[in-house]
Length: 301
Image (cartoon, rainbow, N blue to C red):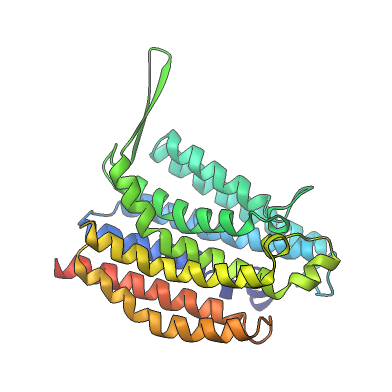
C-alpha cells in the first residue's frame, strides 16, 4: 500500500520543493534570522503535502489518455487526492491565522496554480507558460513565503487597512535580492519541465499538447535550455559584485563543470529515456551547490 502510494505521488520528484525550502533556510541562516519553528513546520507540511497532491491529480488525469496504469482504483485515488488536498488547505489556513492576509493571497495563488496545472479545460501543463509558472511557483514563491513568515514584519511586504483604505508597502531592495537568489531554483525547475517538453515534443503534438518547444522549435528550445543554466552563474557573480552576498557565494561556480558536461549530453540527443535525467542531475548539482555556498556565507561571515 505504502509503495503504491509513494509511486502515485512520485515521491522521487519532490526535490524541486525540498531544495527550494532548503535554500531558503540557508539564506535565513546567512541573514542570522531565528526561525519560527511552528510557522516553518506548518508551512513545510502544507507545501510538501500540496506538492504530493498536484502530482496525484496529474497522474489521475493523465492515466485517462496514456497507456499507464493508475496505482489505485480511480475512486480510491480520488479519495486520496481529496484527503491530501483538505489537509494541505487546512494547514495553510492555520498558517494564515498565525500570520496575515499576504500569506493567504500568495498561498491561495499557489493552490490555484497547482490544481489547474493539469486540471480544467486548458491545463497549464499544455500551454507554453508551464515552464515560467513552475519556475516562479516552486523557485520564487516557496522562498518568499518561508522568508515572509520568519522575517520581522515589513521586511519584504507590509499590508494594512486603515479607515477603509488598503495599503501595500513593498521593500524593493530585499525583494530584488530575494529574486536574484531565487533565480537558480526558478531556472532549474523551469528547465526540468523544458527538457521534458523537448523530449516529448513529437508525442505531445499528436495529442494536441502545445508546449513552449512547439512554438519556438526544438533547436531554439535547446538553446534556451542551455542559456538559462548559464544565466544562473551570471546572476551569482552579480550578487557578489553588487555586495548582496559575500565572495564565498562564488563557490557555486564550481558546479559549472558537471552542469556543462550534462548540457553537452543533452544537446547531442534529446531522448526521454536516456538524456532527460541530465536535467535532474543539473538541478541537484546547482541547488546543492547553492545551499552549500549560502551556508558557507552564513558560517564564514
